Amino acid sequence: MVWQDLSSLSTARSFCRTQQILLRYTGDVGLLKSVSRRNRHTGRKWKPSGSAVVLLPSAEALNDLRPLLTRIVEALGTNSAARLLDADRAQVSRWNAAKEPISTEMGRRIVDLHDVLTRILRVYPPAAASLWLAGAEPLLGGARPIDVLTMEGASPVIRAIDGIAQGAYA
Image (cartoon, rainbow, N blue to C red):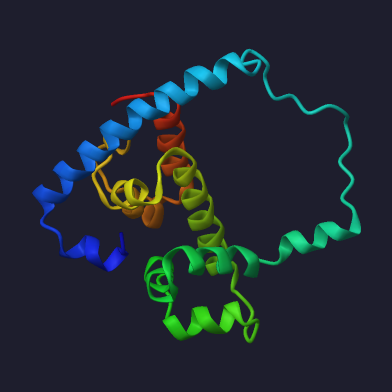
């Protein structure tokens, strides 16, 4: 579903449709989780070994945000990406073409949006993910995940996505 189409739907109809799709996919996710639990060790906590972390020279590539921006633009389109980043469409195109550097604040927004999109698409297919991002989420106090992302950052939205993936309900 295209982002601009979401704004034209009536709130009640959109909410009902979102809930129907999410309930259907939540059941599917539960089935997938039960299968995956049998195939991996779930009691093991992530505990890094060793006391030193040495970054290789190739780690410098992690500083380049353009690959993340490119993936966002490919997933949403330039107009929607610009709207969600609160940037001008032409500015997003210039960043993507490496004609201008990406500011620190915009870099944070790009990383946050990329992280949220990547995580929600691991839980729901694109149509349901679109509805979820623009719909009311009980794990976020009924707020729209996209609004929480812009006002509070990615952390609460990622916690909600992780809760959904683990079968949590508010």
